[in-house]
Image 1 (tube, one colour):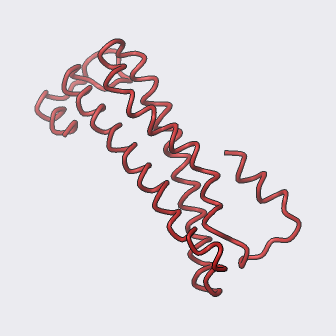
Image 2 (cartoon, rainbow, N blue to C red):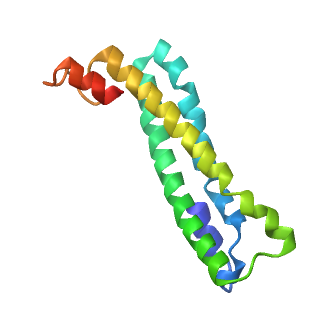
Amino acid sequence: FGLLTLQTLSQKQHSISDVAGLWLMTSVPLIVTAAAGSTLLPYLGATSQRAAVVVLVVSFLLWSLGMCQVHLILAVYFWRLISHKLPAQQLLASGFLPLAPLGQGAYAIQQMSIFLANYLKSSGYAPTQSQPPPLPQPILLATAE
């Protein structure tokens, strides 16, 4: 998370025309780690539900921080594209870089949602509760879906 701050503070001159899609690479580690954690959830859930819930929470926190950074950088990047000309020919391919963190982030949240829905169906209550909630089972199953 501090890489973006370090990147912006280490530059001498700030100019909106210098913004490139490569700035998105600062948030990629957060999203890739969240996606890796979400991919491990079904296997962890088979061995230890507690470990799976911990990985789910950490993965969701990493995902939310990463997606927040991506959307902030994308807003600045699109503003730069609207207000200035296209980037130099060497950086033109960086226009496709927004696809990577957004696609990986979508995969991660889908995997986390699938695991959470299966967890709610099998356990009958949310991971943060010590006992089943006072909700009827059909409402809880509808929430899981």
